[in-house]
Length: 428
Image (cartoon, rainbow, N blue to C red; front, side, top):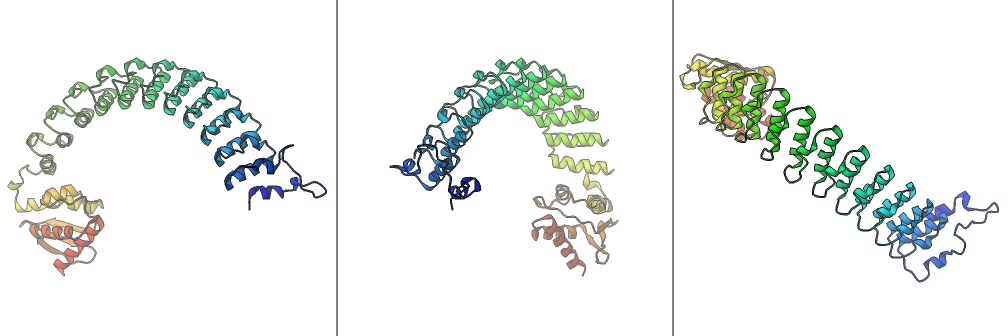
């Protein structure tokens, strides 16, 4: 049942004598509204709603308007505004809505009641008019709605928008300049759409706001990541001359910066021949007090560096082949045992490197119930607290068990179960 029928049955729709009231304006008859015109069901519903509310439906009773356009005109009539400024099929219903809202708030909609403006552009102009700013500075279809929004925000905060009121700036770039103006920094150092992208602009603005010397990195040749590392170094007060040059990429700069901030001698790896992963291994070795001269060689893969660093940190020689059988067993299982005792997941990459296994693809195990012990003959003795008897196997046997578990699993939890199964098969 149509809504207008429900409305007609309300108490206010009847006279005291019980006769139905007519809200139709004088001279306006339902039959006249529809004469000679074809409307669909939804259009008729909007017309009936207008008739029931007593507005002049002739202003929108035209098949050229869809139901959504009719609704905006009807709402405007019901709210007492002059709908003639938007009762035009050239406007879609969302454009009509922006004009209606402007009329209802009492602004001069002639500044944007033009089909050349999209709905979002109209919204930005309307909001500017409502806040009392000079919208002529951006009421131009060459500005998209995002750009209009940044100019409007600048006008509302009282900054000099001439620095960025240019369609050549993206709205994100405009935002960085506006924020710089609002914080009182010298935006001339980065307000150039051809030189800097938005992220470079952000790094320069942040540097200016924190009071560092941005001339050390305000160069379009530096990537955003490089600028970020130099800025962070300046803010922490370290000597950025160790890495503030184009031979290092942002990731390498990050490793050198971390080393400088921790107070180590970064000269061991401030060489672009080292990639970021090699630099990380040298940095961690220096931070842990080991002799990095045994592996600080760009010819070594970072995985080999990692293996050597781990051995050095455990007090073992860098050359694994020189270890006794018991030392090998101890080194082989120390990290597995540590993971079990600490109830942390195994370091899958470390496991892979220690056992020279095929790629584990992110799989590991929470082997929290296993206890290991390296024996003088190179075997490993362990006990499963969940029920297995204490048993001893060789390192090669253990490798085989791990490989078998890998081939029968796809996740961490399934690897743990498969590994436990292999152990049970071995000892039961």
